Image 1 (tube, protein in one colour):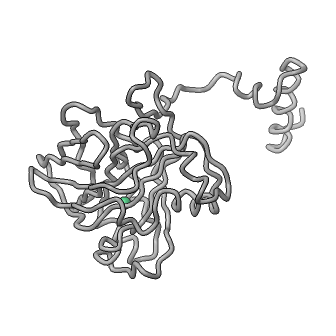
Image 2 (cartoon, helix red, strand yellow; image 1 turned 60 degrees about the vertical axis):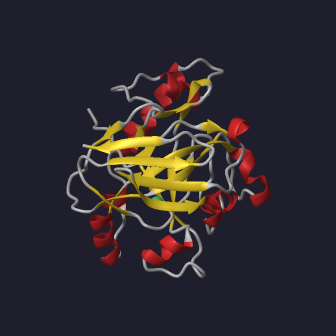
Length: 264
Ligand code: MN
């Protein structure tokens, strides 16, 4: 008997799938009906005042979006266009409103740093979104921590290599619940701060972002079609710094509930 080539196997498999489906069923519906080898949990974020949760599609992050932080990271804030990176969706660590969530100190680093950030959560999207339309896609806002293995990020940057090992590890996308814009409005100014063990480290104002959330969405949508479920970490103000096991971080943004974690 003749052995089927890999290419023939693929096309034969596809033909069988279509043949087995009901005549009116689309290929996408047929694919969805297929059983999976194993189950994966959906990644979701709680929404305040809503029994439904927010399913996460992608996590985008803006780099160097406050002038004073851009300077402390060694770049010129007046000339730099916004740039973006991603964290994997399953890097999400949800922090409940009440109490202090344990956050594991990650492997491989000796310089584990906090970056407190406003996070925008999109319930719709598009390509080439206009700045004036951008906020209509925002379902709400959350407090976030873009946790960073700074020593590894810096080592990769020096070698012109990707940042993943410094930014995209497990639990690196810490965030509180989503506060619907319908309840809290669109946050464009207001204090953003982070204290470690009761001592303020980061303390700025959302209005000091170089690119505001609407501009971030517009810029990002030129490079990637944005979709419902995308969340955007909008950058951190100055005075990022290291934490060690036992430290308690308290994050605040005017208009949102506080968020707290303990490094364990
Ligand atoms: Mn950041």
